[in-house]
Length: 188
Image (cartoon, rainbow, N blue to C red; front, side, top):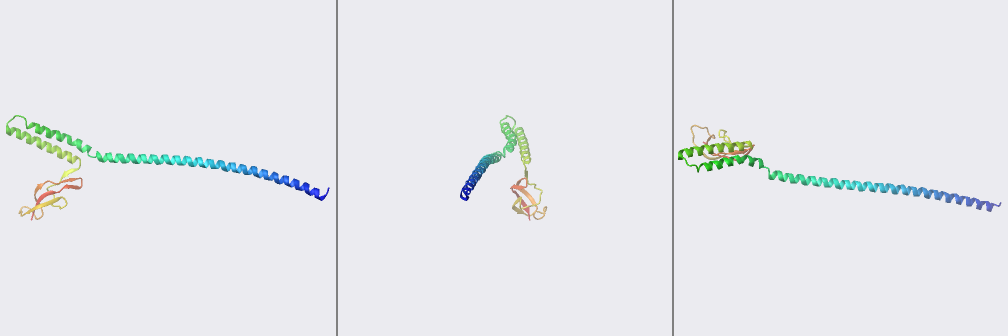
């Protein structure tokens, strides 16, 4: 065998090895591409699931937000419901007082009964107001410009200067806030 022939045989064997190696590399490359494709599909599926979960959570949050907003407005709209329910008996009492004026009786007796009914109704109304935090300003308190409005000052030997002598109109508070100042006369 000549050198040339042996070189050609070696060359053919080497070519076969190279082709064989290329084929195995190609097969490995296809497996790697297939694995990468599976990973990509898995990641895309996970991303789609996360996007779906996010959309659902966001929708739930929006629904809760809308429900709380609606409940807040309803609470504000019906905030005075308990107060109104407590005033209904007072309205009933006033209705009975008006109805009592139609009863035939002596004027003095009728006037006395009417006065007694109105006093009881006033007591009932003040009780409802107090139950809901509305209280009259105490007339025995010293003069305070935050809760009293001095409409007149007079000389009074019985009172010291700045003391309340008389009250023209009662003042009222709601808890700690003044609803209406008491109109008072103070001593000089």
